[in-house]
Length: 620
Image (cartoon, rainbow, N blue to C red; front, side, top):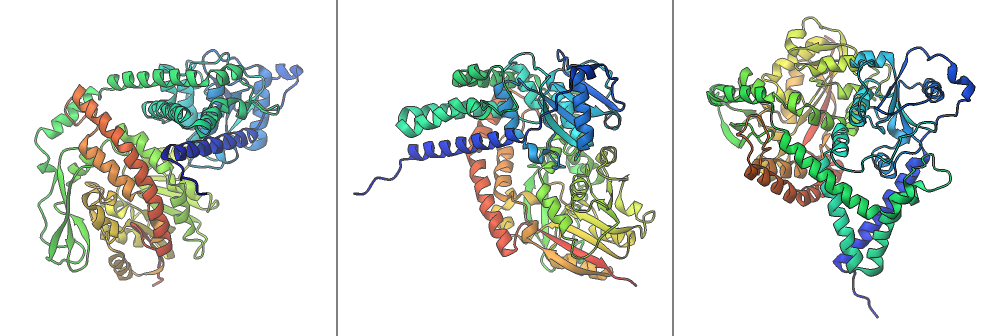
């Protein structure tokens, strides 16, 4: 006798049950890895404060001296410079939320990981506070402000930040499970409260639906969700003992629904209040009053790489990154294959279109994206392993120094310096992610740095420059004989460029001005006395083709209504943006799955949307 296949609802129930089960086991394992401060005898409470440490606490939190001493001893013993203290009675949902975000076994060693904590107390060295520009004597922060501060402090102690349970520390109550305070805390951690609340409410609706329609499978999934707080936190050996565990478990569906509704409402209210800064909007309107044509040079008739006049239009596209006015053309040379922006932006145009992307309004989002590229950074750093053991390394186009920070895990004895046009390079120096930060144009610094470096890297940098050949000349000047030049670029010959057309993310208009095929770059390097010793395509692939296409299309259909360079937001534009974002969610999920498959194929076939070259400067 054959049995009918599982219905769509059964599959949904099975998937939910598996996902909830995996999440429960993961949270329990992470809970087990949470360190616990040793208990200091009360007689030690009168010992003076250890020199060099400050304990920052949220308003209303009063740690006892013994907790402070135990935290100092633990941090010094572990070589930490920042330590977030978790109250032993941390509310159940807050504890589960933290365990979803943090893997205690990996947290310290994740140099690019976001700083996370409970928002009650943080132990910090005075040296870190000074570099971060934090005044420990100011007013006490609220939990959201302390969470934001913890996130910032980890950037200044990227491999020396930890967390631990403090048995003598109390959170003083269950806290607000939702509403404005919770929305503020999520924003402080770089998380979108509106999207998370919508996901929470959608998940509850899905669980309710399968519980009603699918008997045992649905009931099992709903029951597992209901009991999850107790299953994770209720064990006898749990380092966290939430005071509200019984109540949080018994009333979880109701409490979760109420928290999701309150957080969603608070997020909507905050969105209405999040009007663009008046001065910034006025500056943009002044820039746009004369039109955008002035931001473009005259069209050139020949290829900037080989001089051929046999050109054809490759793609025309507006600014899909920020939705700023303007339209841009990329042309392709029919002789050498070089793709370039034609007409290209003027320096004033570059300033206009870069503004509020890597800093200002878009700075936090860009930093979050760069912070999630750890695997790519490691792959770039490891490419040099068979060829050299460098003492000095200059990363050109370093931004905030994310690559240099990550590469220290591969090259701990190498001195990393960074160069960039933006202010981020100065921040990278303050964080300690680079030893020295140079701010300005690379060709201008080349005479001062001639022959000083064993490695120069240009990762997704050349495509942003106005004259990539001049940048290669500068690299040849800065490198010592026998030194190495590492370059990574988008590959304009990628199949996805043809398939996705204007929605192919690596076109990245209007920022990318040149996209050179690998053969062209190899030839240019040979002309400057370099020998290519390694080339990678599959490992350099960035798995964002389909996801990026959906995101760019959504931006094109409904730009951010609060952008300061756009017209004032209205109910209609806000509603349209919300509807498009909601409709894009399943498309983004499908795109992420396709990108996973595409990345696996790129790795196996050594073909992708980018490539890396490693070239040695020959002695002359």
